[in-house]
Length: 425
View 1 (cartoon, rainbow, N blue to C red):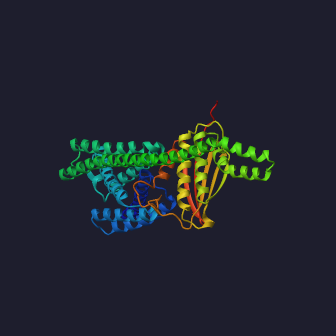
View 2 (view 1 turned 120 degrees about the horizontal axis):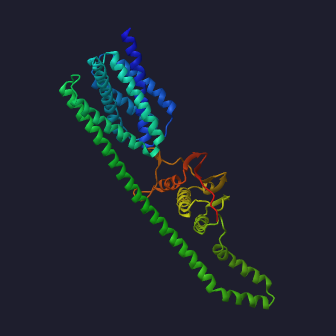
View 3 (view 1 turned 90 degrees about the horizontal axis):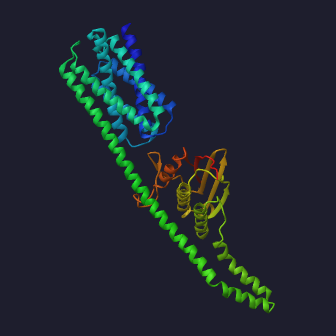
């Protein structure tokens, strides 16, 4: 009867441990996946791990098999590289085993019985279930903490080290000295792993910021050149204005109306290029949209616009420029080598209550390449490009926003949703 209880307990505890391990990887690495599917895979994996546990296989082999299974699950769920998930999973397994030892030792001290340290007793199973409850509580706190979840994880690592130090100094129960030394080393490794993870994430963040800054400088330089060309056209037009007036006067003076009309028609193109429509009421954003449309027209790309922009909001023009500039640049690049039927860009900006939806669509013969859940640039220089959507995401997050991309029926669509607040004049 005891064996049956153990098997049932192992089945549930293994399933919970696997599921929370997957959740840890999703939360820390900010991966999006189907949690229901993760639950089903965790249940299947728990059955396999429980079967291995029933075969009296040494614990180190069971743990190794569990890590391998979790890597296969992560690969199946997220299609991501396994370096960082493997790092997190490895130390997650060590941390769970450490806390199972700590809780069982605390119960042994409270009840003054070393039976709680025996993995084959109900006392140890009680410790395992307490750890699962603690994991559930930590997961709940981490979910509520949002970006502060790393502090929760750090607190768990520090508490584990202090717990082991406390056990090494107590004299109520007898714990093998070699086992105690092993857990002290493991607790220190967990703490170092947390520190290493923070340093790695900080380095990656600084690297992304530097690359985004370089990308922004490139965009500013390109827009500066477009602005310079616009003003050059403007200056040329007004420099020759008196000559055009004189020519029209001579035509009309001699009643040559047809020639005057044709002459005026020839002047309309540069005049229209200088007279730009107002889209959102912000000079920087309006100029950006106009310059991108002009660039598209010069490349025989059809542009359709549908813009309804709310007035007086807390959305900064610099963020709108970053979002629209990158989305439109990506679309211009995507359709540049497409056939005529796919050379189109649709720009839609709509207000939905206190939400602003920005949608940019473009023709695309094939779905863009993706890796680790991120779209990849098609340009040769990967270090200088491919950060457009990262810049859009950074700007959108300032307004609790999101960015979603989709490809269907030879059309690529990027949608940014922003929350905004009305601002009084």
